[in-house]
Amino acid sequence: MGKVIIVGGGAAGMMASIWAARGGHKALLLEKNEKLGKKIYITGKGRCNLTNACETEELFKQALRGSKFLYSAFYSFTNKQVIAFFESHGLATKTERGERVFPRSDHSSDVIRTLQQILRKEKVEVRLHTQVKEILTEQSEKRRISGVRLTDKTTLEADAVIIATGGCSYASTGSDGDGYRFAEELGHTVTELRPSLVPLEAAEPWIKDLQGLSLRNVKVRIRKEKKVLYEDFGEMLFTHYGVSGPLILSASGIVNDYMDRMPLAMEIDLKPALTREQLDKRILRDFEENRNRQFKNAVGKLFPAKLIPVILMLSGICPDKKVNEITREERMQFAKLIKAFPVTLTSFRDFNEAIITRGGVSLREVNPSTMESKLVQGLYFAGETLDLDALTGGFNLQIAWSTGYLAGSSIP
Ligand SMILES: Cc1cc2nc3c(=O)[nH]c(=O)nc-3n(C[C@H](O)[C@H](O)[C@H](O)COP(=O)(O)OP(=O)(O)OC[C@H]3O[C@@H](n4cnc5c(N)ncnc54)[C@H](O)[C@@H]3O)c2cc1C
Image (cartoon, rainbow, N blue to C red; front, side, top):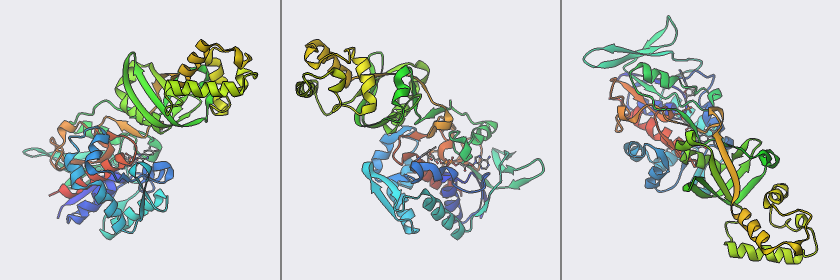
């Protein structure tokens, strides 16, 4: 029986602790906050989308980075096993649209409570308010773990250390990048860190007039010159600085490599269910019904009220013009605008608003079958600290559970 120290009491750290203890080790979980799972608490808008009930193979498609690396982790502790794990410990779950899995209570706190109960049952020692300052090693044949440093005077011995300190997004939850520093101090490479699954800023001055407007069932296309980088249907939101909402967060993950090559052109298809011809017929019908009204008073059925002033302005048609005076060419331009409402994306918001950190401990230096460092014996990594990230839908927590499980259960 060895002594294992797990640094970080988030999703990955708690899962790793449970499985290290189940493997017969003396597990000590160190968390710098006053409580465990502060980030889990805010996941899924407080409801915690804890995994996704898709076919397990689908998990790999949702991983934006490291899908090959995740093979052992995902198959050792699949999404189905995660659901069964929580259910068997008394957490009832439900599956919603897009196969997203939530606690049936809709409270993320129940996920944390369930994990805490298991930690107690498995006799994991938990120390809160305990920040690890340094990971200690000794040099024998190969560099190996010897413990951790808490203060100048306090060190703790360990046979193995699992770094599960998270990324550096939403730093107020405790994940402020310590794990990257530890990894670098131990000789690991940390790949470039970027905010991902994050809102995007836009150049148009009228964007702030649309603040709070949420659009459902729209299609968004993002291009760099002629190359289409992202295209999907769904829901988005305007903010005072730009755009957000599920579609945009996913888009930010996919166009992340273009962060240094902004601006990017975004087009919103406001009527994706209609072809250009169908849309033209629809506009004609509305115009027919409002023949003698002014243009500004004839489009109320087509758009939400907040969008109308901006649409009118971008249409180039005088808002006071009588509908029966609008030319065919003007109407065609209007339809074109509805199918490709233009927004210029200028930058990504910062880590404080990012769901996930892109980049992290280089996967080339970690054994994918065990999560053990290839450089330091007895050193393991789990969760967002690694250079792994996925789309929204419960996939990032699945990465934390699977890599946490694999790290904890691989300690000999
Ligand atoms: C707003 C928001 C909503 C999200 N919603 C979802 C969702 O619904 N579904 C989903 O799958 N993913 C979601 N995510 C992503 C998901 O929360 C993360 O991917 C996941 O929590 C990462 O787990 P982790 O254990 O690796 O890191 P964290 O959960 O960040 O845990 C790291 C822990 O380590 C501690 N720590 C750091 N440094 C030290 C140190 N030196 N000593 C001791 N302790 C330390 C921190 O205090 C923290 O508790 C969301 C993220 C955010 C920000």
